[in-house]
Image (cartoon, rainbow, N blue to C red):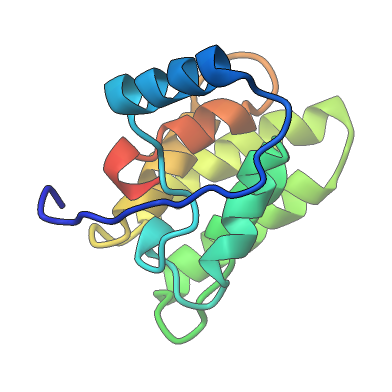
Length: 148
């Protein structure tokens, strides 16, 4: 997307002096800005992507992951849909044993995820990893940067 160029105009900015604005612009120049709100993001069409972006900005990573993994009944293969239903059921249960079951269900769902559902597979593989609880923040950051 190197060909995309646009101008941003800020008006009535308060709270930063000239040095603060320059520091923010330098950070933007060096590191860029991750577009969490783009129309093409996250590989799902059933959930408005801005709702996923809002959840991420609010650091509600579990909600963001649940939205990304929301079922697309017109696209889900039967075995994947069944594995995802099992994962969602385990995720809804709050006791520690269910969290272990959720990790195993995520592992099963990842194995049954169609290859073309790359983002969903990466998320499920990340949720299945580790010995502790489900790490939804790590799962968000398992999504390749160019898709976030």
